[in-house]
Figure 1 (cartoon, rainbow, N blue to C red):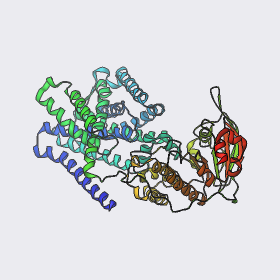
Figure 2 (cartoon, rainbow, N blue to C red; figure 1 turned 120 degrees about the vertical axis):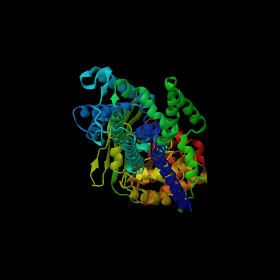
Figure 3 (tube, one colour; figure 1 turned 180 degrees about the vertical axis):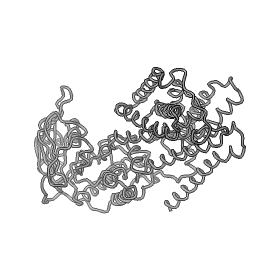
Length: 591
């Protein structure tokens, strides 16, 4: 029934989109007015530019305010080559090529910045390009700008009437929308959104966060450059203050913000709503409307933020998409019974930690920590808060570099390897959860798990099948189409485990997956961990819930003040006087 509702909603959405696109092409043709043609050409241009920006600003969550760089490169490439007698159809692709190079050069250092610092850096680079265009006047015409030769015809993208220009602009809009749709429904799109939502969780899932962002910005830059090439021919004149304009960059971003950032068709809706308002106002008021578009955009943006925080697309989706919230908070338990730890045989070492040391300033967080993990073993890591447990986890999963010591992992080839980054650890079969759950909140349960499944399955169909199988196995099958933000803490912890298990790890690092959940959920979690162990996965678990430690663990290591103070079976450790004094307390010993 849920799938039928989803399919029906998708059909309604496709029909609505087709009507919007048909209207963009049919209305100006039916009215046959040059000013109306201009409005709809402008809608296509800004909708395409905003859709291209949305790949970086929406999918990847990088608020770029310098996207006019790529638009300007495309514009100048087309005009320069046209002046040399080369058709802008070729100049369009030349501009796209140089825009991709500029995107990589500019974005690689910027992607290491976060929040407002990234936005400020893109503004700075935009200003650099504007100044360069003003300085190299022999190439760009400097402040006086450049005119194009008025050679009329399709070869030169210059026409006496505006219907051909509308056809070209509409075609480029369709191309941009198709690329945006393709990205969102492929591995790249899932990884971009995962990077936006929780970068550390994405890295743990084997996503090369910088790499996928560079791919995204390269595609975005190429599309913006192609639109810049066409727009330059449409305007017949360009100059640095216009094409490398901060106001223009902000305007591109605003359409996506108002229409629905991170959605495929939100930027299109934003342009369809705003462009006619501003263009009609300019036509009616003439010179008195100078700067009016900024006022209109500001007013609409305020109204959207107040009444439609998810943009116009968020409102539209209420009518065209089924409810994806989790109607019931918690998954059913996995059908298994908790079993007390018993003597079992294990295989060879799969992970060896030798003499790990880590300092934060003058604080010695870990001191000479050494242990090993055997194939099929469940190793519990316990100790008081601040003992250094999570620091050890970060060092044995690549999120933190040790000051000294080593971590080696046995690979599928049977040899020990020394991974360094989270991606290296994921590639060799080490998966981890986090002390504070890190779901990709705006994605569905199925999509969350697919991010992990993409580590082994690059094809979307295969990844989706693996995600669904994992979800059903871990008791999340009923919530596949619910957004992750709708789950309770117990459901979120289970979801995080499912995402890691979809990576098909050989070693699973669990960081307090039972913290903050009730006793019923603890029993469910114990059942789940036992079923994972029985599937052949070796586990290291940081845990404070002693019920779980006693039920799950084959061996327990106790950390205190960064040092190992005890190691043995659960029964041995809980009777150790040092452990009782440092962590468990006399009450537990007498229980």
